[in-house]
Image (tube, rainbow, N blue to C red; front, side):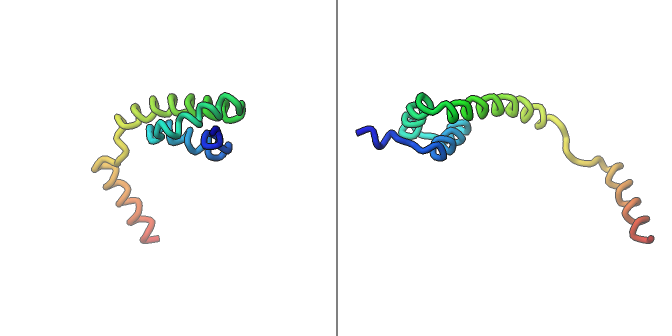
Length: 88
């Protein structure tokens, strides 16, 4: 009966990663929770993954506000430098 709830550590980490992105189904989460009760290594992996996801989500929000392209002046200056370098 409980064989279907048995997971390997590799399967547990894959489901953990999926659950961080909200892609894991309830059918996958139940065996994962049971596995995390028994396996302290996977529980630590899940804890670290949750902490990293929390910090990255804060960084990702602030990163969206930053413009990641050159202004027209910077583009023109880069063209001039490239043309000078090409002439050499």
